[in-house]
Length: 552
Image (cartoon, rainbow, N blue to C red; front, side, top):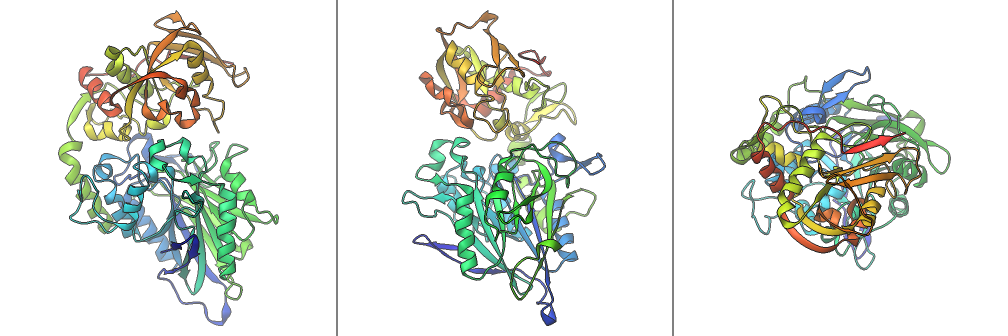
């Protein structure tokens, strides 16, 4: 692994089994396989979260750790000099079979897969930096102990974060690592999104700062170059928004953060693997010297593998760029699942079953977290209504929740029964509900921030008591009109009690106007609110999508 001593990067070469260097100084083929945003999805994800549209536009069931392992094994068998990497969010927001055990089963799976290195994503910090270090170094959880197996050794691969700094401004995590394969060395740099503090709670990143991704990459790249490591790849937990297309198409919205990083980092970096936005694309971006290099992302939940085939000149140790090819492959379920990984998954699922399989309610149809043009979603409506029901007796008149906190659909199949495990997968963070007072003007400011300061629109999900309209044609900052609560127009000067989770109350997801709220009081955990609502409303149907109206 990589060690950081007094801010100096000490590189320890990690050996990956592969072929010996080709005799006669012939170029050495190297295959880099990567995935991103697994989020502890050990079992095959369900609903739309478990599907991929292939190059022909056909929906294919995809994902599941044992199938992921089988496809990795096939790719390794095809190319002896193969390195497996992850671009972060391996854990956090995980389904119950991983989350109940503090994501230890997922770390066990990643070790079984043979991951050589991973950058940290924002969800690696969900339980704070101390827990992140435990997942790296091992040891039992300080409160719950070792709840999956009698002991826990931690990850055998390094968690990288070149732009994660401590209070002294020194690297808090390894900046890079070097993998030796086929007689050549590949430098792997890892950075995470510099906006990370806006998407986690303040307590989770106390004592840490997150620097510019490009500057941190360039510093780590210079260290590698100085030590003679010419072939370099970047794992960055940031990416572009997709614009349709198949797994290997370059269909991205212009102005993406991932593309900006790929264009900006130094020319010694030969490829950029991105993450965070849960999109699929294979693009090329010019480096500062004008030479193209791959920019890829592989969706999420283990549904795609990004495959980069490189050729390394054994004399210079550098990548022969013109020989590079890249693609995304679907992790289909039409292969024999890997037995060793399946055994870990089965162990976790079996141990979690007494809790995960408990019925908590029933629904009449799928409750989806995707919606129509307004941004309102059926599942978002239900969750907001559940949060209002849990806080109404304490004075709340409206509930508002962030779409990023809704992690999966709630499927009807097979019989409409909702289990604890399914509900947990939808709301896995354990955020605490809080009630704050906002004036009508502050509420309007919150709603305007759905577009202002966001890399893409982030539509808040609202309870049935709140209605408003927004215009696509109006300028950002002046899009929202006709706000009503309980059918009455909102008075800009009047106070309103609003229920939100603690993440939003602190201004998370760039909704800084929530932090202007006053008279904060606490309530129950968001998952408990959903469980109570499901239990009190058996046969729950998808609500009518009439709370948010959009005009051209």
